[in-house]
Image (cartoon, rainbow, N blue to C red):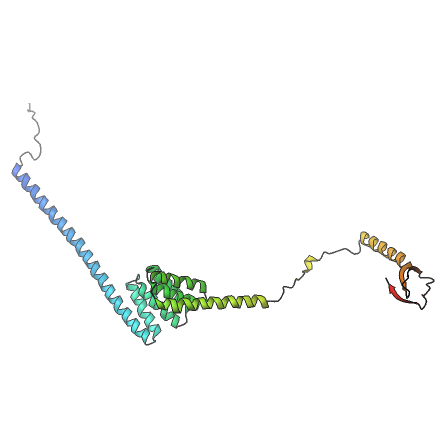
Length: 262
């Protein structure tokens, strides 16, 4: 008969020293992996910073080129340069503000207002953007909105004499002229003529029995009144006399009667 014995556990013959050495090597490999991952993340972050720095530098270069073109009145080319710069730095409020000025020079007021609004959205604390927005709004005839924009610009930079003496003063002058023109137009406007539409006149049935009966009654009454006519006669001496004339034998008054009052 075969003998039965306990099964020995796997790895029981592995020495303690070998196990510790294996654990140490695994920890070293983990540290190397962690260091590699940290270096990889750092490299990506640094690469992103370099890319952003390159975009900002390129955008500044395009902005300066556009400004030079605008000074030489080459407005379309300047706008093209600034649009390229906005692709690199879309949050640059200065680019939108400069673009709005050039669009006003081209008399494109709607795009100018839009560009100025984009500038204000990206930098609400820029008084130049608010000033440009007010000027673009004046170009559209939005005087009240323009005055508000100039007031915001003054709130940000109260000591700016250009906004006080030129922009805001001119906008208020235009507002007064607009009020005067509205009063004159209102005073010279013709009186309204009331027009009656055919629907406002009721459609009577003149051949109905009721209408015929009413007309007959009115005619009969007029016959009775016309048969006996009453007149008040004032004589030359001042005497007043009431005379009833009949159609059959009407007696004319004598020559002393000169006033007939009915």
